[in-house]
Length: 213
Image 1 (cartoon, one colour):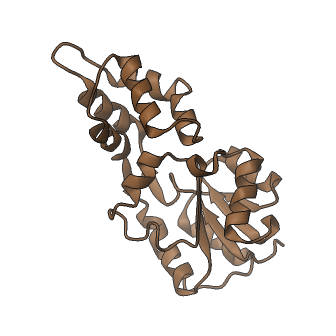
Image 2 (cartoon, helix red, strand yellow):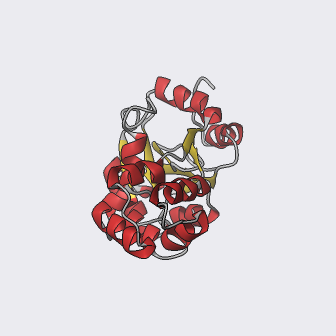
């Protein structure tokens, strides 16, 4: 039986918040298009997600300004940068299913954190007051663009453990992607793939964690 964790890390996308890149593609395309130049959502997907651009942005290899310039050059457009950041980021909705579980952990004063591949635009959007729990409810926040490492690379889990102040074997991690779960386990974490909040609660109880859920 797995041991009781001392710290829990949550993935952000499709665990704490749902997101949809198709929405980003549509919104960025609409913003970038002009009467003379029509940019399609498919073109945005090619420029941002089918290329290495989004990966570099989330890895912290390029700044927001460099991402913006690369997008403008590839699409031959010049949308307002602040508006493009919103168009790229207004893609999230709360995972209401997991809120009671988070509340139970917070009531039990159990230390929790976020471990996520994300970029500065998304993080600023999430933490600007739209979602009351972000970032104040979390004891450690390990973000790929700040740590210059991405899941499932071992380096990001090691840096996340250092941020939390616990040994890898003392940390439980939940992610929606199987590859990231495997990477966490290889780094020494106890990790499971997210399906539902109910199933996650069962996994935590298996590990001896008690809470009012």
